[in-house]
Amino acid sequence: MKPFRRSTLSAMAALVVMGVMTAHADQATTMADASAAPATAAPVDAKPKGTTLGDVLGNSGIDVKGYLDASYIGHNQTPNSSVQVFDTSKSSFGLHQAGITISKTPKEGFGGLINLTAGSDAGIFCSYGACASGNGTTPGSGGNFDITQAFAQYATGSWTLIGGKFATLAGAEVIDSSADTNITRSILFGKIPFTHTGVRATDALSDSTNVMLGVNNGWDQVSAMTPSKTVELGVTSAFTKDTSLALSGYFGTAPASFPVSTVAPMTGTRSLVDLVFTSNLTDALTLILNGDYVSQEYAGYLGTTEKYKGLAGYLNYQINEQYRLSLRAEALKDDSGAALGTAPTAAGNTVKEMTLTVGYAPMKNVELRGELREDTANKPLFYTSDTAMTPATMTATSMTTLGVQAIYKF
Image 1 (cartoon, rainbow, N blue to C red):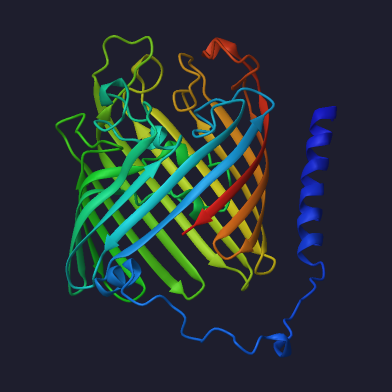
Image 2 (cartoon, helix red, strand yellow):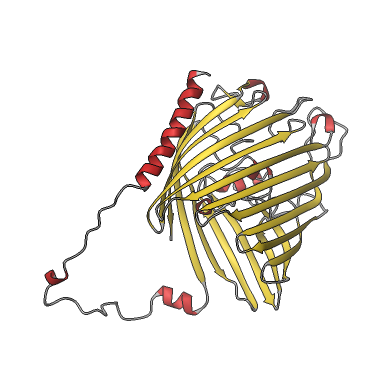
C-alpha cells in the first residue's frame, strides 16, 4: 500500500473515532439559582408591542426560510469537474450558497414559490438562457446569482399543477446544500438535470402515493435549446412508514456533442431513468440507494450513442441530537468517456468514490461538518497540474479530498 493511501485510511479512522468519542462524552449541565433572581425582575410579558413581519407573513400563509453555506475544500490533485461538479479548485475557501425561499402553497387554490440562490454554486447550476456569463448560451457558464425556482401553483382536490421553473424529480441529493448529508456532491448529482422549465401535474392517488407528469424544455433550460420538448414521468410511494421508493424518467431531444465527428446531427434523443430507495433501518440509521441510467444519441466518440450508469449508497447514522455520521459510496461507468470528459477516445472509464462526513450541531439551526473523500478511476481522470486541463493532461487515477463546512439555517 502506498504511504499516501495508508495516511488517508488512518485519517478516516481517526475522524470516525473522534466523532463517536466526542458525541458520547459527558456534558456538564449548569442550572440557574432561582433564589438569586432580583426582586424587581422584568414582567413575563416583555415583548415589544405591535405586529412583527413574522406575524404578517404567518397570518398571510407565506413561508420564508433560508440558509448560508461556507466551506473550505482541498484536494491533493486538481479536480475533474465531471467528477466533483461544484469543487473545481484544488484548494479554496468559499461561500458556496446563500439561499432563500419564499412560498405560499395552499392545499386548495392558487399559490407560488420563488427560490433565489447566491454564491459560487449558482454559476454551476444556472440554466441555459439565464447564466450571467457566456450570453446565457451554456448551462453552468458562470455568475454568482441564480433564480433557482420560480413557479405558480394551482391545487384542487388530489391534483396540483405548477408552471415555471422547478427542481428535477431525479436524484437522491438536492441543490439546497443544507438538506444534503455530505459536503461534496455525488458523481451522479452532476450527471442529472438540476432544474426544468415547463409544467408539471401531480396527482395524490393516496396518502402514500403520488404520480407526476410534466412537459418541459429539457435539462436546465430556461430558454429552449431545441424545438422539441422533454416529457417527465414520476411516481413516489411509501410502502410502510419506514420505506419509500421514487422512480422518475425524462425522455426528449437534447443538443449532442460528437468529438471528431462532422456528420452526426446537432441533436439526439436523451433518456434518463432514476431510482431512489429509502429505508429507515432503525430510529437512528437510514439507508438510501440511488441508481441512474442515461443514454444520449450522437454524444459519444465519432457520434456514437453515449451511455452511462451509476449507483450510489448512503448510510446516515444519527448518534444523538448533536452528532451524526454519513457514509456514501458510489460508482459510475461511462461507456464512451464523454460523460467524464475523457473524449475524444474510443474507450470509456469507471470512477468510484467513498465519502465519510461527521456532522456536529451546536444548536438547532447550525451544523459544522468535516469530510474525507477518496475518488479512484480505472484510467487517468485527474490533473496533477493546475493548468492545461485537457484529456491529455489527466495523469492521476485517484484523488483525496478534505473539507470543512458551516451551515446556518434561518
